[in-house]
Length: 171
Image (cartoon, rainbow, N blue to C red; front, top):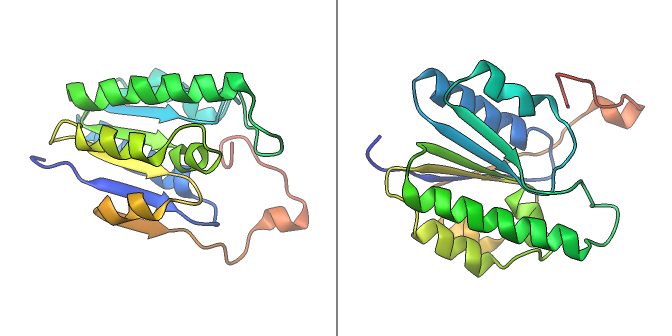
């Protein structure tokens, strides 16, 4: 991998983070170093244990909790902005082969930081680093600069029948 591309996984359907984790698993098993920064997430999803099983995989939650049902507080904004600075540093140093910015589009949607800041960060990334940006509502400015954009579309999901998130499957 001499050139790292920019991927976006967006859309209303489920599976964006899961797709990014699938790519992370593949990369880590190929001996590549992977970093995943999760914005807007502070809940204890099962994937936060990935480091215990994959030596080339680092995951960090860069948010306090999911706040999509309330107005973000200043602490949410500060956590997101600090997370973006950290990810910017990671991308520019190039010590990871794959960097996943999980739910970065949601952070943008809630105006926790500016799309211009994300674009500048991507411009400063080390050339070999593959970057994945996930989350609903990907802004058109990011879609324009991305090399790969996948939109997840929900056709059918069992949560509409009241099935709650299951450990190891949805959480």
